[in-house]
Length: 220
Length: 325
Image (cartoon, rainbow over all chains, first blue to last red; front, side, top):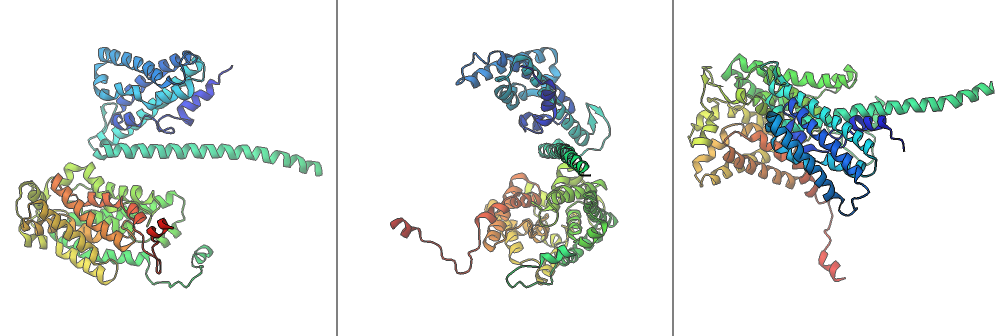
């Protein structure tokens, strides 16, 4: 069976972006987007866990009985989350501190469970690894851009570099988190919808026009 | 023009009134004028500048939003009702006279674009734009909003709290008469209660608002405040006259779009609004009229769903008989 890696990539980053399209993993998204750096840290951690858990679940997909698959998935995910926590605690304590409670909560993050359930348990290990990678990239990008938006407006800095003194504290508060999230979902949905419809119209035109033209040509 | 003609084509005898949204909103603007003038008299040119900035930004952001949607400019100007002007004026009324210039501008843009236009413009907003704009300003520029109140007439900067926060935090009784005439530190439009009440009376005479509802809201707030302070009736007048309660009751809570349609729905809405205002004030120690209005506005669709007018001649079905049969 040949796997379509291009489709997996486009799916993960754009068409079913976990944060902006599937609206999964909202809890870390709302809480951690105050700083752009948090987005990269959280995104990297989630990407690592996604790839590893996807590969292992994909390898074990024929062994795990159907009735106990969720506990089995959670067990596999929890293993990798523990690895990430221990590594971050030892080597990058500053990121470990800023992510805080949300790092162990990756275990029950919906993105990872959803991908395990809907992709890894049905596909081979290579395709699952690619799916994990691109889903992780989509998550990281969404979190980082939202974090940058909120950091610029709410704290007047980007990636910790100070830009100006002016700040709108609304965007640093939790109300601002919900507002920013809604705004990004709306803009992303609008852009992808317009692109989609434009593509559709284009396809229709080519199909509609060409047979009609040949017919008129015959009549003449 | 053909489209607009079609709108009037319907069965049943309908009476077409002379009232338009524009006319009602102009009435509200006129009612707000005395409070504006009083604010300018008490706080000087700075207050006038904030009012003008807020009003102009509010109108401009509505027009710019419609231009971005590619509506023709002529149509925009022809259909321009003064709701955004009212929003801008109301927003400026509940800002302090000491705020920097960007506070009214940014909050007016937020109030019009995010709260009103995104939901579909006049008559379709879910919550009151002016109250939400004030909350945006409060959350964003908290330090600029609540520190350094200007003393009226003299214009010196006070570092202390306003009379209402003084009352809530330490039980300090302010002078009721100066609260009534507005000779206290506070927001631009909220200080002179006489001017606000005059505007309210004008609106009642013109039939724009019903006199019952603001009175119920204000009375319930005062009574619940009294009850929360162990039935000490000295608390009634200061908690009624202090802060933005009268402004909120007359101009913000009575907004047509964000209040229930039925009489009983309105009764529930305003009583709850008063209770929420008094309880939140007691619990948080800050001025919460705009927060209470925002909170209760979100309940309006729910109230409208469950409180329905009984149609004329409608008889309620008896459940007991059905069960017997």
